[in-house]
Length: 96
Image (cartoon, rainbow, N blue to C red; front, side):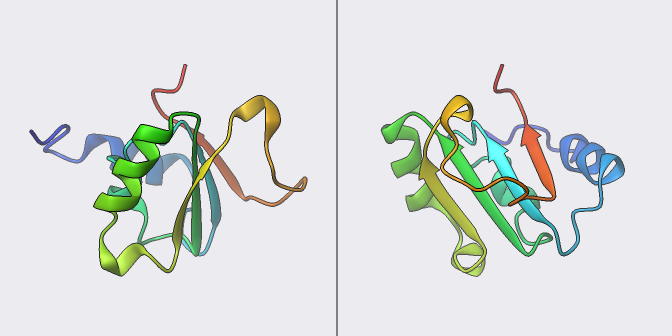
């Protein structure tokens, strides 16, 4: 099932911030459903997710053309394994 067939989510993201050439942290990336739809625009995307099962799904479903710029990491927002100022954009989509 395709969610958001009209692309409203991605258009809203691109209207809110400049994703081109950005370093993006996506908190609660889940299975990568949204990540794959915007992931070709930023320089890098790190998707974090506490669920190992969802990360396996995201890694498995990741399109070949995104594998060089999209990475999935098991982590939570309160315990980020990244240095301060590592990202230009932090995205929370359906994570709360």
